[in-house]
Length: 66
Image (cartoon, rainbow, N blue to C red):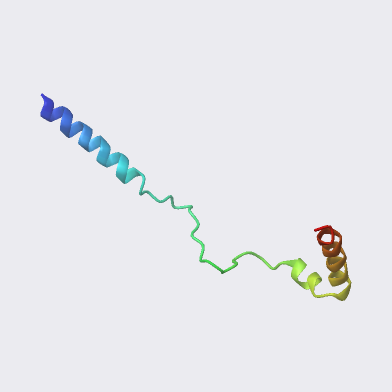
């Protein structure tokens, strides 16, 4: 009697533990440091002198009060 209950509980515990190891087919695995998205238009904008000036002004407005 107790042996059947024990095996049932052990089996349920084993299934629950193995269920946590399941990996869904639509799971995305990313490599660290590798961007796999599309091109970023802000990167080309960042190189312009006008944008650099805007960023410098913004930085000085925020950082000068510290």
